[in-house]
Image (cartoon, helix red, strand yellow):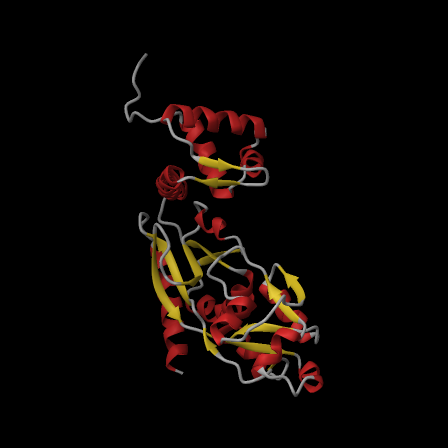
Length: 303
């Protein structure tokens, strides 16, 4: 048998593993690659046997990467991303002038979009594609050049540039405040709360807010949402109290559509960052967008 030059497993198996690791789902990987879930499972099993280690931990409802799986995925995601960039450059015959920027829909709708007209006016030759997702696994997709993240500033395989810190405080609609003017920070756990459930562990929810504020509580009441902007929409509709991030909700407060309830205010445990791959050179267009994001955020920090 002829030995492979790079001594690698089947590229098909590696591509299937990368898709499965990115989605943390054999079913979603199969859908993306247009094969059956059983075919994906067979390829993963064969790859694990060849490597001699398990790459996934499997239970009844989900799969998770093992430590070797995390290492292999990081290398493959970076390599496929760089290959994708080269292919796009070859196809277009020049360095691309389009940039893909990933962020949550809440940040995109409430902070980014109101400021993008300035970028479009200054750099009309650059086309920005927006990938808005609350699943940060999507940020590893090959076409993504830049990401805007909330967290502590350390993500594997990424370089982070600080945009700004943030502040958190409870917010609600004006009519709701009129009905609950006697509310205090200590009474908040007894009121209807609006919860934003996000897969990212760095996000700050009500449990974390009360823990940091030293407010004891039992089981928290209220509605739950999978989108931050829907949580804020519910607060605008006087449905309860949401955790407000100052950078996102300030325009609504300035307009009087949203109000603060109680004097509770805490530094957000996470900051906002723009990130990019530490293994992929940014295109000139992506560098322009990154510089604009850092410049715009620096101006806001100084105001």
